Amino acid sequence: MMRVLFYKEIKEHVISIKGLWIYFALSVLFSLLVFSFVTFKELSFLAQVEVNITFLKVLLGIGILISIIIGSTMISNEKERGTLESLMLTPLSNLKLIFVKAAVICVFWLGILVISSPYFYALTYGTQLLPSLFFLLFVIGTFLVLGFSLLSLAFSAWLSSTKNATLLSIVVFLIAMLPMFLSTKMKKAGFAYVIDRSSPVSSTLLAAKDLMINKFGISIIALDILPVFLFFIVSILALLLAGRNINLLEGE
Image (tube, rainbow, N blue to C red; front, side):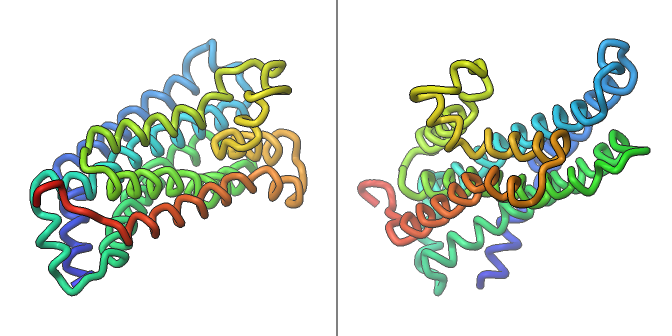
């Protein structure tokens, strides 16, 4: 039964017209971005490390945004269409239902990783940056993106409205992105310091800087990415809690 539901979700979210158009749009965007990096004079003076970190930021930001939109609609859409009740009457438990939908998000993110890999190869050609970038992308980036998408899936299970679940997921994402818009001085004290040190997005970018520019060792990198893994664990716990309390729309 899990396999049947998994294939159904894959057809609906990954290899559907919507999913394929998203992959196509990402390919065009990445192509234009990489082309601008290697051709425009203003960008040709940038160090390759800075160019690759910039591309990494764009990829992670887009990946998180797309994943949380998909995650925040997965269960709330079922509620609004009236199909959740039939799913809950199957032999699958709520947690298994949640697990299948989370697995589909993983597959969608894997597709984005596959699409982006040739572009990173082109940007790192002639350097030794590719292994570090793939570690940041496939390991740290995966935990980061899945943390946000699993949390959005939990919101989708808790809330009856797709709009509310999506809005709440985007608000959490924007709060995590807030340190990127603050000056270095502002991030040294007060609430801005707390947000910067606890934000999984800031932690990922700090790890990228320390790994690729500062050439720090694994112990420093591990401290950098600690908030990413803590956020991932919190997201899993929220999803497990949500899976035990999936409710139909009022009146159903």
